[in-house]
Length: 129
Image (cartoon, rainbow, N blue to C red; front, side):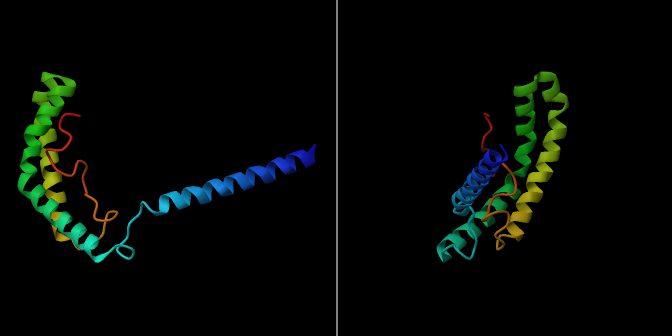
């Protein structure tokens, strides 16, 4: 009986090793770095991050009405009127700060490969979800 378990354990270990190596190979292409990117991709990432930062600094104030609308739509009129303005002020400050941070750090490939600091990247994205 122990020989059966030993064989099963070996097969299980081999299967896990193959699965881990396969996942690593699949995931390896999804992470971009400055080292393996072309110069055009790096410049496009930098310019996209800088412009996204400037846009978020300029339009951060739109989070105020957006949060009121979103909470009104999702949770009702009372919460939209009472909680929405506070959420709007908080998100307005967060988006403006994130935009300023993105603009000042546009040359850094962080987070990810020039990914946005906030989701959604712009205030007008995903408003109907």
